[in-house]
Length: 330
Image (cartoon, rainbow, N blue to C red; front, top):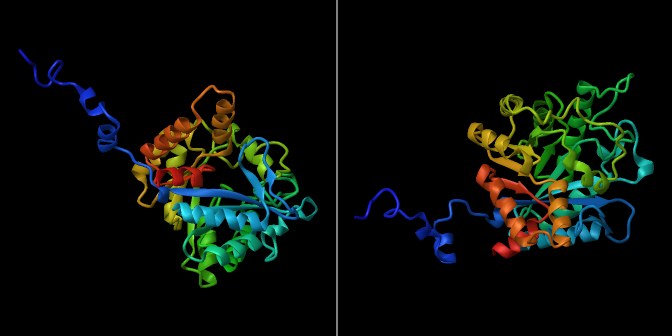
């Protein structure tokens, strides 16, 4: 007699029989609009500079950045997150290139906006680490510690200059206490209520940032454990989320993505604004390196990793594969 509700009457494999069946019942789907492309632009170079630890990713020239932005737009990607890499000689303790209207990031924002208008969201990294000679995300006090409140003053200036350059979205990534409220106020003071704030809400002090340090020419010595979060903690992320929402964040982010899917799921459950996740340089590098050695199927691993991030609750995914994957999905 056939038993219904248990084997052999119940056979879940019936919903896995063909590609079309699996596609029809898929609970999680990726779409080009889910993606944001992080991109680096380097001052003073005439050709794109390959990033050794991130095969296929480069430090762009101004011209190649514009081309990358157009390619992302044509693939259906929603946004491009810009990181500026100034000439080493221009870095200083205060991160002056970060608030110079002619600093490389501000120039790149203007370039890309002129190229894509409002058809692609132009997002800007709002942090000092790329522009300081010490490599920290804020200014230092007399004892060499990151001064939270002095850094907030610099972030307010950065927000205004990036908005003036044409950023649709600013992405404060420094993990300073109070940064979202200060930045929101700074933008509103200059009449830029239209500029959105994507808060790096749960940014962990991760070992997976290694290749990014090469990508931005980081001058960092030491670590960022006094302001980025401890990988052991999740309740702390929910506290950060509550504070960022209270201060006016329009979107929130978990970074890294893959090693913190549990955190991402918790944040997604609690947040009433869109949730982003950043698939960072180390996550990218591991898949590319393993694929180059023939240890994994590159394309399948990329799609599986991105699907896992989406399944965990991310509405938006920052990934260096954004344009490539968006093209495949289309």
